[in-house]
Image (tube, rainbow, N blue to C red; front, side):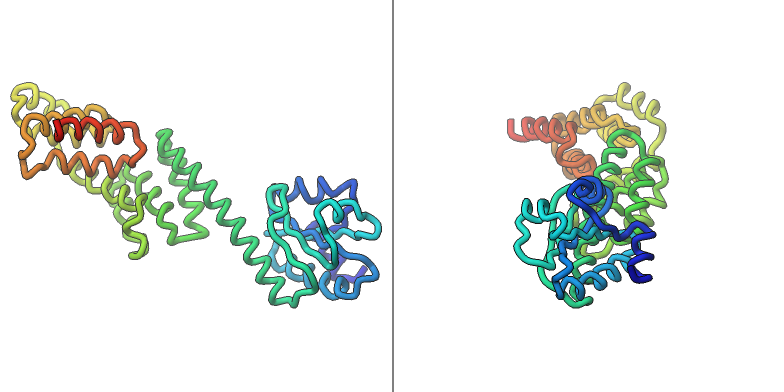
Amino acid sequence: MNVGVAAATADGLVKDTTTQTFRKDVIEESRHQPVLVDFWAPWCGPCKQLTPVLEKAVRSAKGAVKLVKMNIDEHPAVAGQIGIQSIPAVIAFVNGQPADGFMGALPESQVTAFLERLTRQEIRNEEKELLQAADAAVVAGDPAGAAQLYSEILAGDPTNAHALAGLARSYLETGSIEQAKHTLAQVPEAQRNETAVAAARAALEIAEQAAHLGPIAELEQKVAANPLDHQARFDLAIALNSNNRRQEALDHLLEIVRRDRKWNDDGARKQLVQFFEAWGPTDEHTVAGRRRLSSILFA
């Protein structure tokens, strides 16, 4: 064994496998990071050219991928099971399944490009899982946890519009309007109309409106004293929404629409539409609110 192979083996990035250890070395290990399987044989000249190139590329990837070598003369079963008919053959396993591969002794540049494509896809998958977890944390009322996850995504992808929008929403949940505004300003121009960004922008505008209103109790007293004071009811709806009391906010705006559709240049309906955008199309209050609004408008 030469010095390069010894070093690679010592750091755990390169190893040989057998039929008995294939599940542990490849299937199980590929659930943590992609694993390349190099099917080779001692008599194969192109294999001898490819293996050092593979080892160098894997070491350069610094742990993003591992290399497992299988001598098909000594261990032919696995190669037969997955249809390897000629060597060298390299199969990439991800999450326990074959995901990509190539045949023949490729030059170093093409092997490097293959690894970059493979690891980029792995990063995208991890990013997707983090986004889902962060979005779930927002829904669960954990803005600090969500902000941490969004920030983790942005550390690797600073222009991720979904993560920027989510981080802004997290700041809004904690009352940090200026931080939310600064975060949204970082969204690339071409992505500013994406659904998540538009929703965060609507939420920011609503939060800025709410910041200038009086206490909810005072607004409730005004509405109780004069049910036709639509401005007080409108302000109350915005204040209630800022306290995550969406159902009550919805009820008050719908009441204005019901009583006086044209008030303030159709202001209550427009505010409802902004609420729906901020809450998202699948939110239960959005779904119910759209239905109730339609029944009023088209009765």
